[in-house]
Image (cartoon, rainbow, N blue to C red):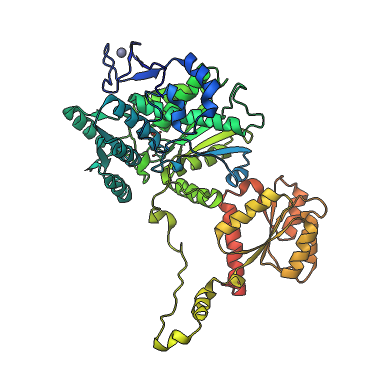
Length: 570
Ligand SMILES: *Cc1c(COP(=O)(O)O)cnc(C)c1O
Ligand SMILES: [Zn+2]
């Protein structure tokens, strides 16, 4: 259906307004490259309030505020419309009550760059263009390759040679003309721009390209709609729609949050929301020009000539004016720029896969490492509604992230001539014997609160092979402890009925169970007398807010390692 809403391009430098034309990327009055799309917002508001809820959940449902005439375009293949997942384990670990994950891995080429490619390619197809150029740290090139193939548009992709081979091959399968540039990403962009200029081809200029910024808006629209559906009294006619307190994303050039910010502004302008979210903008420590500028209170970022992060996806050393726009947003509406190390990101990557079932790429993990940091620092408050963009899937996992020992090897004995008579089961049984569960250390979790019990179970499952026993209260704990004599007890202190102190007393009083190491976990801080009491029982003390700390995990590991050595298990 052709849209009735007119699109204009307004110059951010001289204010001139001209009809939108993708082939005309500069202001005809002053030559500025900073044009911004504007629409008939009153008309869009009327249409959305009446019809938005009837439309399929993809980014095309917002076509009145996109620079396209036909929606959905023929090239559509399910970009956007990704799920907003409620965090299950990470939220309680961080003591957050409203943590949501926007699962952008579920886009056609597994990253949120599919929004950018889908909208831009649709725009170019409508304008009759048949050839274009991108510079990329990988994901943009992959997304554009797929949509260009559908649109019959020839694509030139300039990739820095730092991009992993797997991503390069993914680009190549679509028939894209791939140019590897041995240089930084910022230099690669210059080479691509010069190539496009010489040939007169359209080039995606990131934050300066209207379709590119417009595409990222759809994230804001979807998040608001989805949060509104999560609300118990959700109804479209009931305004305002629900806004998160935080939008958190790992950034390279900062296009994502720039587009998202425009999306929220438009919703606000239309009276559909009544406040703006804070932005959590996270960079890799080896490429952090925005964070540096922010810390110095500067509105302009100094370019970083040699980014030094292993996370290539985030290696934009010169964010240019995009930083200034984000800086102004954060000054006005709140938020923060923060950095995390590659190692913190890799750890968060494990955490997210093991705790939420989401395998993300290292760039995405940067956002989650940032989340953890901001919660620990108290910048993000427990009750706040937080949305983190899970920007991309990891494909495939780079081996340095897993380390060794990530698989068990089962070898079936070679069969000789006469072996055919042997029961086939036997070889299998022998091969599987070193995976036998009776060799695993046994850990008893004593916790009355179910979500906390589930969380502890999941943490143990992800740490290694343990046989996990669970008790809902002190009485059940003592009964299981007597019967099973576990190798370790993780004991909640505050329980109704028989509390942790009483359980501990009973365990220590009985010769069967007196030797079992106990890790006591508690939510409230203990007074001196209580601490002394635990000390005298030789119990280790851990606070519930510390489940994310390496200390807690290392404590469990080391206690269990001692047991293993002592008892000869495994
Ligand atoms: C491009 C990309 C980013 C960075 O996004 P920008 O908003 O452009 O800075 C983060 N994660 C992934 C997976 C990406 O592909
Ligand atoms: Zn101008």
